[in-house]
Image (cartoon, rainbow, N blue to C red; front, side, top):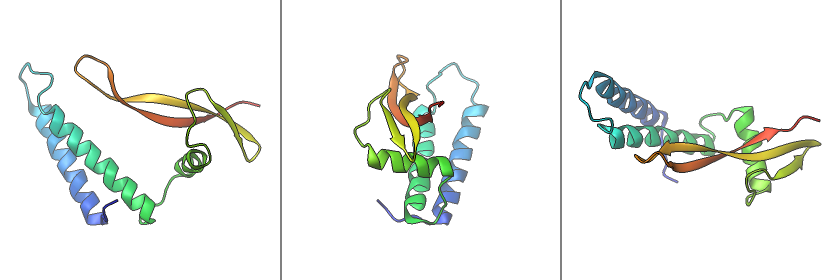
Length: 117
């Protein structure tokens, strides 16, 4: 994982903001205009944030810490798998992240949901 600084994160935020502003100003009829630029800017922000969190420069939220712990303990968990951690049951779920032009999910993001007792 590349080493990033908080300045790199600020620059990534500014780039993302500029690309989104360009998209907002666009008044043509091409729905895919700036799509790859927008995706690249968003992915850069996510990549830098994750790197800074892994290095300890940025603090993870409690939800991110729990998710990281569960992912580490259960790396092969599939959708709807139920696991127990510290006396609490969690179910593995996935949500689509980004879509191709045909509407199909580009990739999936896994997350954990606490199950009621």
